[in-house]
Length: 195
Image 1 (cartoon, rainbow, N blue to C red):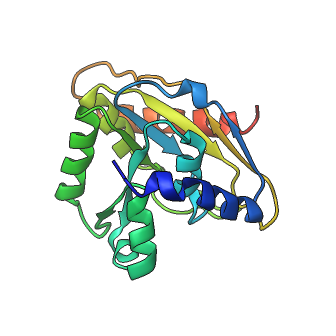
Image 2: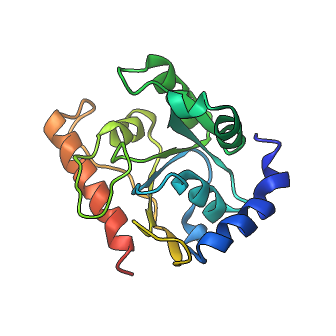
């Protein structure tokens, strides 16, 4: 998977490190087999930082909005890091099927539950798609914290937490349960930033 990655990993890490001094923690928490990697989101480069955090581990697939993937240079670059397009204007059945397929195949999938980049002082209602995918496939969720709203030449902390399984009272969780588990997930992510 992603043949170009081994070639560009170290050069990309070098270039990214010129902008931010990275501090990577928690790689040992990454489980074998399928897993949902869920991180907070404040910068365009967040998916790349997660890939760099994982280093020589199994690299994740991740969704990127269709408009970004259509850009000739950026789209090609992100595809090397495992991106696939999603149409955010509606329910993109193809992207959902791809996500389910990757997880059932034992791959890693990166999702940003906030659904968009969140700037300093702003809050968004996180989407419950990640916990629903975890429930449907039985894979664990791995929370990941990335230093938010970082400026050039500031350090970035990339911290991977312990995997866990969301808990529901039945095989068909209610919307309330999905929302509660999503809030719990975001709390786990931001708590990692306090360590």
